[in-house]
Amino acid sequence: MSKLALFGGKKIRRKPFVSRAIVGKEESKRVNSVLKSGILSGFIAKSGDGFLGGKEVREFESLVGGYFGTEHVISVNSATAGLHVALGACGIGPGDEVIVTPYTMSASATAIIMQNAIPVFADISENTFCIDPGSIEQCITARTKAIIVVHLFGHPAEMNRIKALARKYKLKIIEDCAQAPGAVYKKQLVGTLGDIGIFSLNQHKTVTSGEGGFAITRNARLALGMRLIRNHGEVIAGNIRLKDISNIVGYNYRMTELEAAVSIGQFRRLDFLNAHRINLARYLTEKLSKFEGLTLPAEESGTKHVYFVYPIRIKESEARIPRDVFVKALNAEGIPCAAGYVRPIYLEPLYQKKIAYGRKGCPFTCGFYKGNAVYSKGICPVAEKMHRKELVIIPVCRYPETPRDMDDVVKAFQKIFNNRDKLRKFQ
Image (tube, rainbow, N blue to C red; front, side, top):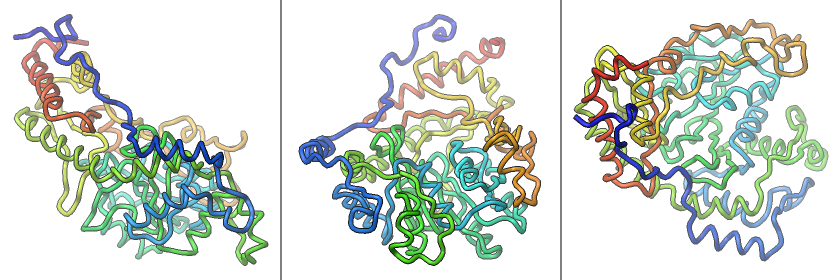
């Protein structure tokens, strides 16, 4: 039996897994063209063609619109900005509540606070880690105006049930698709199932421009609202004779021509990169299925999982290895992984102390808010269990890794399981 690297033995893998985006020739060519033009941004904060951005931005938006079959694409400088403009366009404001998962990147919730509204946290599904429709309904009040659905780790949320709730209670749906571009639910691409879909081009995402993002919608009114918030809408409203000027206080959320140039080349490879991830993930699932105590990633019926990461649940009672010890041993063998994902958002100081704007507790103590948001430990037991006890994240199923690279993961698992007796004593 080989000695674990955690105890001084030779590690299974010495070569690091790829952890950054692969930039191709098209991106380089386009960036050089933009640099030669001298036009690094085509946006102008006034009515006219410049209000919609430059040549590269418009080409990128057209490319995205063709892929998703949506008329309106609004590029932004981050998915956080995308969430903010989406909430503003949906009319979210002081006194409103928006339901969101606590098991996501913090911006999915703080974007709600940016509109002086209140995040209400619904629990997640044990199978997909996405927001649980049953928990959503329990959170709905007369103040609820929208649901932010996060398609976590690349797996679509249960959209049919969520859409039914939205119709029943007259709620907007904003899909946070930062980790799931190209994922499919019931033959529809995620992002096209709700009112607005938001996507990220952050450095860690499947396709990237370093930072950046975009929103998609079929609703012209929502699209106009997002474009106004993106680009200093308060100075445009008079020129276009806008009757309702609520929520059009503008920001500078504009994408540069350089970002758009990179995004075009990256986005054209989206399907290829997703297919590569799916093949590696399915290969890994097949090989890891022999190990007891592991729940491997689900692919629910009628969905296409695009594996932003490879999530595993480990049950200590069956695997006979504590989750956190398993993670330490796997990292020591050269396989990158993490125990849990993020701490449930409501446990962060902002929510525990209910302090955001100033020192008086706004928006939680805002005079317009008549509710009592609860952020106590235990409100989302499944999310807390995943974080504390069961979830393991492995970010290796990505281009240009190969099945041979996945074999190193399997060998590390086998080595760890062979040494379970020793690991149970490890603290």
